[in-house]
Amino acid sequence: MWKAGAKRADTTELRRIVRDELELDDDDTLTISELACPKQGCPPVETVISIFPATDEPYLVRVCKAVADVEPMDVIAALAWGDHPDSFNPSSLFAD
Amino acid sequence: MTSTRVPVTVLTGFLGAGKTTLLNYVLSENHGRRIAVIENEFGEVGIDEALVLESDEEIFEMNNGCVCCTVRGDLVRILGRLLRRDEPLDHIIIETTGLADPSPVAQTFFFDDELRDRLELDAIVTLVDAKHLLLHLDGPAGADAQVVEQIAFADRLVVTKADLVDQAALDEVVRRVREVNSMAELVYGEHGKVDLDRILGVHAFDLDRIVEMQPSFLSGELEHHHGSGVTSVGFDVAGQLDPDRLSAWMEQLVQTWAVDIFRMKGILAIAGEDQRYVFQGVHMLVDTAPAGHWAPGDERRSRLVFIGRNLDRRQLEASFASCLVEPGASQRVESGSEAG
Image 1 (spheres, rainbow over the protein chains, first blue to last red):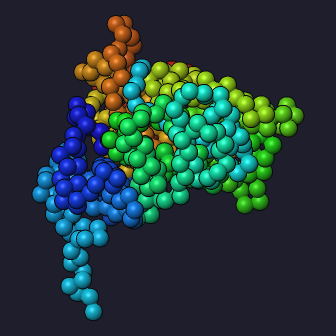
Image 2: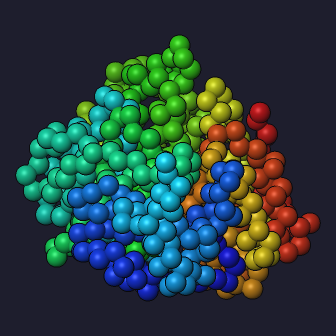
Image 3: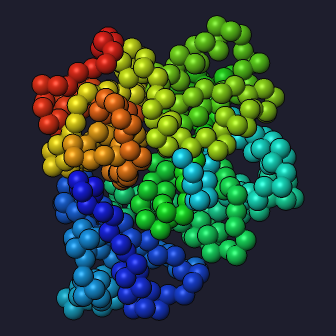
């Protein structure tokens, strides 16, 4: 979301962290978006990291902060807990 | 304004409107230019020099079920691949299927900085079939939503098959198209041929194009509400905008109107800034960027246009005017009628 006087956040470092953590190669596409979804239940602002593997289904993880406020540890935590194929799924602890 | 970004033209239009015919004409008339074509219906484009890539529509939802947070995953992958090529491209053309929803296609160019920095959405070109359009707008189940949205998203509207209808029918087609989208330039095609300078390299999102927006559109003279509820709203406000109020207004705009606003464009005069700002967006994805200094003596004023469903002109304009440093300075340039 635009803020008066604010420069667009540089996402270079975030992209590097995600690529390293997920061991993405050049054929995998990565996007980073800041959303302010109007749908009920969505946070006022969130950073959505979407991964489009060259030969697999896309998936995403989210950090409930503006892009400019996202720290490396937020990304690492989101990747660990998020909705991607290699992540740890806490709901599995409670599965029957 | 010069750009080193690769221009992208999105070609839309309902089934049978003539997209493939036009695309073949574009490619045959563009010898020597390195054009990549992304299409869903592979095998219909017959120009050897063109790099043709097939794509299967893949809707990617970033938030479950919200149209504002939906992009085309297939385009993200293919565009990413094209940008990694060693040989640079002069232009990319995306031909959508006749049934494609234009929202995810357009949003693909706004949702990621890297794509936005390397690609320029040159224009969304929608073909309108003069012979059959009214059947789609006045069908027994009401207006076909996809046809209406394809018209609403357009920067250029190419009227095809005009030679198959009489002047009265053509006038009606134009009137109906204008009810939905008063902003797009109309171009007439004849037997699959159009003036290519009017649909390619048009920089529809540039400042100059926004400045050229028609006064009649901004005045509300052409504003109507019809069956689909999709219409255009524009206004022109004198004075300078308080940056904090403007930020809050944009947040509120997105929260309130994101689903119903298909497209928006504008120029902003922000207090304390020497530069004009271009404002553009698709649903909730909004981009604002400096676009050159105000000339000495220029009157500071802002100009905005919205195309969407069930838009409330009074609410949009009044809320925007409240962002002025001196709200009392707000005024409409033209005194057009308020159609309802």
